[in-house]
Length: 155
Image (spheres, rainbow, N blue to C red):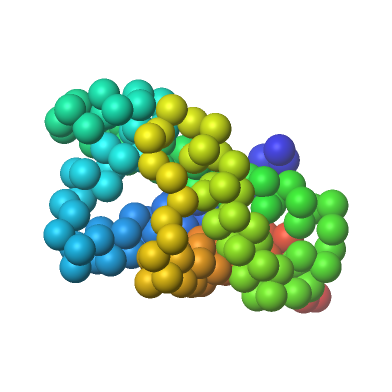
């Protein structure tokens, strides 16, 4: 990754990760799920069921993993956008589509292949909220931040 990529990837990952986790905290608050439980569910991807008994250390691990994943998605988009200029030229649409791809891959590939006991939800509100969050809070910010670095500078 080029040196100039680092600020875009870090900023994209931090913004997307922050927006996504705040969304999760607010959404699940109304379903009586505490932030610590959300973070432990992320940690369950590597710890399995033990994460739910892991207390604050498991929650901290979950928060760290959440941001590592967000940084990974930001890096992947950045690398793709360097190769395919259409992702930069049409960053808003590309970012929203990327968010949809991230949603599908996370929920139907990554989580099922992890140690997490979670299964994809069949609750329409959870699905719609999750899709919208991934489209507007993950994919879109990552793409717009990558565009700032990759778009040709005006003379």
